[in-house]
Image 1 (cartoon, rainbow, N blue to C red):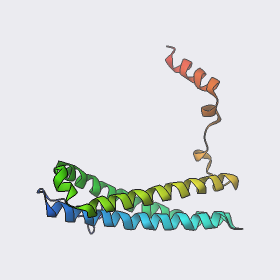
Image 2 (spheres, rainbow, N blue to C red):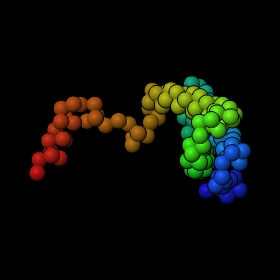
Image 3 (cartoon, rainbow, N blue to C red):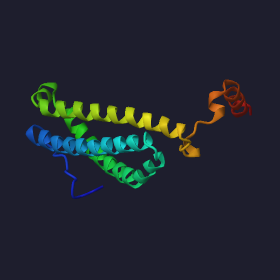
Amino acid sequence: MDQAHASTPPGGTGPDIHFSLIEELLRHLEVCQEAYSLVQKENQCLKSDTPRDAYQNADSRHELFERISGVMVRISAHKSLWMRLSPVERSRNMRVTSLIKQNMDLIMKTVVLDRENEKLMLQHGMAPPDRLPSSRLNNPAAVGKLYQQNTAG
């Protein structure tokens, strides 16, 4: 975990937990904005005459994934403390609620656009073989046969 950005959630309640959680939610929102920007760039590449240029973002994607993972660990630590607060205490800080909503909205926008990018990659024949669905998964008879093989014994 990135210690420079880590904030330890306080053991207490009240303003400390609000401030600490707001800091982490703002960091998460920043990383989500970077992810959305990256997915937008990939989308533009995939719609251009040179769709394979979208692969240039692979390193950035990996680095962002690492950062998101770190922020998520810290938010999870804050969540348990946040949930221990009474509903009245939680409702006093609408900033947290607003940031959670902003994060969720941006995550959904990113996921939708990323799915579109995956479809474009399939259309261009750019999907890695390990990401393609198995034909057996789309064949009920094959699934049934696998089930029978694994239950026979």
